[in-house]
Structure formats: structure tokens, C-alpha cells
Image (cartoon, rainbow, N blue to C red; front, side, top):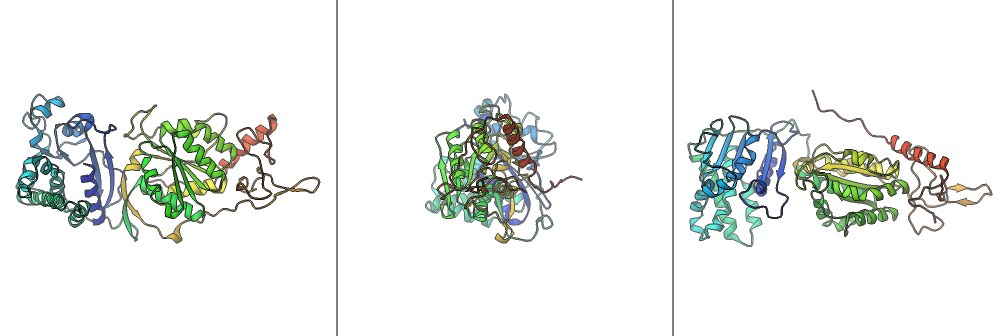
Length: 492
């Protein structure tokens, strides 16, 4: 289902529609097929104008089995189209989800336009000349369904046929079988009289500024944004991460880009991941750690340490349902208060939140700008819906990207009473209140930082209450003084 949705999305993007997607899949590695928890779905909303949501009430539901029908029927409005694979509506699959009688025959779907299609039978019949086993042929029924929907919505077909031939290049028989099933679905829509209506959705010419576009998911856009930030800052990018749904894709993607000076470290746990990232920040890298809500809880002490050290560090939280392990593959935006206040003491951290999948690119650049300019950890607060969802993204020109270069400390910055030139690690920029960033090993810049409260300026350990009060207020003032543009409100 994810592949089917992905192909429909790609053809819709290449046609020029605006779109928004919502992939939805079970948390189990192999959820039992035909059960309600095992339903995998892909929702897509596309139009000739700006789209801001994947669509809460789909106009068409393709139900490959009784479980898919039962799991999604509540979202479908009256009068909508339901395409049902009748071959699966036999006694055992229906019993699995609690249907005593067939919903196709008991009148319970009378409020909808139901199209009964024997998808499995038609697919096997279309592929009878390929010498495939029944099980192998049956696997192509999703391509039959995709062909039918492509006819219904006048989607281009060349891209999907090329994709199938490329994907199964080493198995040309399987490639041609899938292409044949795809074409059979298209021809079924064209010739059957059950589908009286097809739909034309024009390209969204007014929604898009001129440029080169590609379809992109939030996690991919965020990964590209981090690489772009690293190049614009002229700093190596370092990711210290522990795999967790739905953030793992960022680790997977960044690990492919060593040619851009990206280092990825898969740590043994969440705490090691952020510890390594903070060490990389100390060493002069653009440092990132990626996680989801449960991981943020484990990272909180080290985030507080980054606040005290006043080093740039990006904490990427791709939110999911909680509390605890919660709902690994389902979306929730419930970590805001944890991001704002989930640390001991007074440890302010600025938060950047993308609004759409494509905006994750800009949000990553903005988070890096704030972290580098103000020497502070920054939360990048995305979520599973943005991470896995996709939309068209205009590929920016390099000249449009911000200049994020920073100056490392290169020599003494303070003169003592006796005239000696020294380096003070907590002497501040008068505009940003950022402290200097001194790379370890720079001669003459030996300095002390750490988690115990520091004396203003010198960085020596201090238990003085007045100094602690001053440092707490200074760190807060630094975050309060961050310059950000006003939010754009998309509302009548």
C-alpha cells in the first residue's frame, strides 16, 4: 500500500498538482495480515490550489480486504466512492474483523457508491501468460488498483511503468507482470460501465512560484536542510543518534552523504548519542542529535549541560504518540512542554517548528542559524505526520541560502588588571550575548567549561548566589533576544 500511494503521489507531483500525504502503518514488524491492527494505509489529498492537509474525509477509499474497510470506513463521508476487492470478502477474512454478514450484501454501505471489483481474480487473469504462481501473480493486485485509480484521475502512467522496470531490472518477468497488471487496471476503468465518472484535476499553477520542484518528505527535507546548513556554515556536520521511529530516516539519509563532510554515529543509546554530539560541538562541528519523545526524556540532562556550556547543538525531536513508548508509528504533537521545560533548573532552549514537510528544510537552516549565532542548543520540533508525509518542494538556488559562517576564537579576548592578555570563555558578544567558541587545541585558548555553575567571564567554578542569579538571567536574556521573523498566519 505504501508503494502504491508513493507511485500515485509521484505521478500527481509530476503532473503539477499541489498535494499532501499521510502514510499510516502498523508499529509491529509483521503485523498480522487481515486484522484491524495490521492495516497499512496511504492517504493523499491533491488539488489545483494550495493544499495544507492530507484530507480528513477521503472522497475515495480502496479497501483491499474487510479489515481495510472496517478500519477506515468511519473517515469516509456519505456519498463517497468505495472500491472493494470482493475476492477477499470470504467467511474467514470477515470473521477476523467481526463481520457476521458481508457488508457488501447487508445494506450497511447503502450511503456510499460501492464499486465491487474482483481485484485478485482480474489480476491473476491478466497475468496468466506469464507462468507465475498464483501467489506471485496475486502480489501485483496493488498495481491493478493503481492503474484503475490512475484512469479515474487521469494520472500520467509513463513514470510508474519506468519505475517498475527499473525496480525489477534483474527480474524482467516480474517487471513486465507488474506493468501488465497496471495497464489492466487502467483498461478495466476505461471499459467497465461501473465507473460512470472520472475526474480531471488541473495543475496548481497559481500555488507554485516558478522553479524546479520535486516531491519530498519531511525527514528528507530536514536531512537536506542540515547538510545545506553545514555547507553554508563551512563546518563539518556531525550526527550522534540512536534509532527511534519516526526519526531514524534522518540517520539513514545523512549516512549516505560522507562526500559532503557528514559524519554519522549510531550510538548504543540515546544518552550516548547526544553526548557524542555535544562533544562534536565542543570540537567545532555543526552537531545534531535526532530522536523522538521518549529519547528527549533521556537526553534532558545533556541538553541542560549544553545550556550551561553554551555550545551550538541541534536536538531534532520527531514527535510521536506517548506517554512512554506510546504509539511508535502514530503522530502526536505532545512534546511542546517537554521541549520548553523538561530540564532541571532554569535552562531555556529556543524551539523551531516546521509547518509542512517541505518547510522542514527551511526550519533546519533556521535552527542552525540560531544555534551558531547565539551559541545555544536549539530544539527542532517536527512530528511523524510531517516526517513521513510529502509535498512538492521548490529546490532553492544556493545563492538564496543564508550565510551561516562563524568566527572561532583565535586569541586572547580580555586584559587583566595587571595588563596580562587572557582568554575568557564566558566573555559575551554585546549584541547576541553569545560566548566565544574556542576549538580545543588552539594555542593560548585553554579554558574551563562544564556542568557546574561558572563564574561570569572567567568560567571558573562558582557557588556564589549572586553570580548564579546573574548567569541564569543572562542565559535567559540571550534566548529572549534571539531575532526571528514574525510568524505568517495562513487564515482568512
